[in-house]
Length: 332
Ligand SMILES: Cc1cc2nc3c(=O)[nH]c(=O)nc-3n(C[C@H](O)[C@H](O)[C@H](O)COP(=O)(O)O)c2cc1C
Image 1 (cartoon, rainbow, N blue to C red):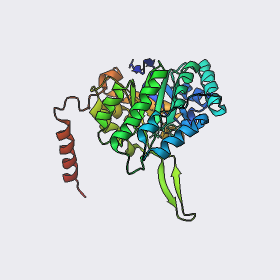
Image 2 (cartoon, rainbow, N blue to C red):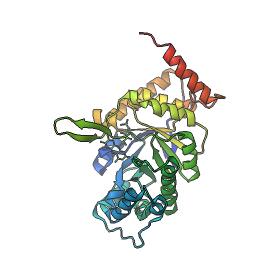
Image 3 (tube, helix red, strand yellow):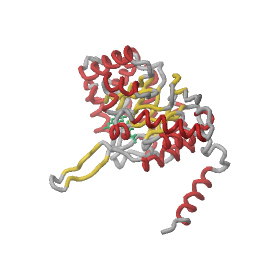
Image 4 (cartoon, rainbow, N blue to C red):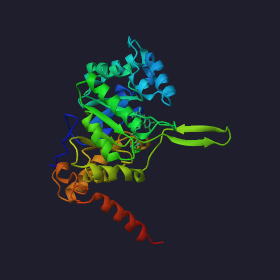
């Protein structure tokens, strides 16, 4: 009997498969379906800062003033916070309903860009029954006068502030655009995160040449998109006291095995479920188990991190040599 149980964000998951935030994790009905097909945990679709709309002025203040008064924008907190808000309250009600009806851990998701009073909503998500909280900070720094340390401080302050309002484990869905992602991961752990999701996937940008307007579309990935996910799971494995979730480009049981061997504790995915339906979870599990049986693995713990950079004395040199080797060995 192969042991797939996995510790993640303080919970025991029956397997390392997680449905990441998407329209499939919005309502009880579809979450129940994910559970029935065998998913280990679910990240709910995000509640956006903009939906907690009493705080809209805080967001506007941050986004419009970041050029000239960044410090002031960070410290600006509305004094009297009233969270009577229909969209956000619906979200809370849905968590309560889901928690009453399913047995798997439910991770709520907050998505925002500023450290305003809206962040106190984390406490409400916890009180509604969320087992953990994922924070997704999606901020494109378009200002020429905002430097990297200021952007990094935005992330850290938002995390620290959110942490003050919750006692459930906090996970950060990271993006890969920091100039030193390993150092940032360390800073995030110091700010109190229990988990890091590597990585968020940006929305696709294009241009409609008929209407002459920009287009932004939710990005459906393929298995080829998992490259950065594997690279950074392998680099960060065993370096920090943090759970690692591989996200982006995980489309099959074989992708999942690769992510675990790179060092991920769990894997989350969306695109493959949107393309093939929730029943694909069974196929992914079966493919993973068949491979493990053939290779005589008895647990996922046994293979975790086996192909990481943990035993490489100089990862920088390893990455550089692999890069040169890949280019020089190319054959037409
Ligand atoms: C239609 C759609 C909706 C999504 N909604 C959210 C969301 O609400 N919050 C979030 O953090 N990520 C959201 N994502 C991103 C996914 O959770 C996931 O990180 C991304 O799709 C990469 O994983 P994949 O390669 O398995 O698709 C969404 C993705 C898609 C395609």
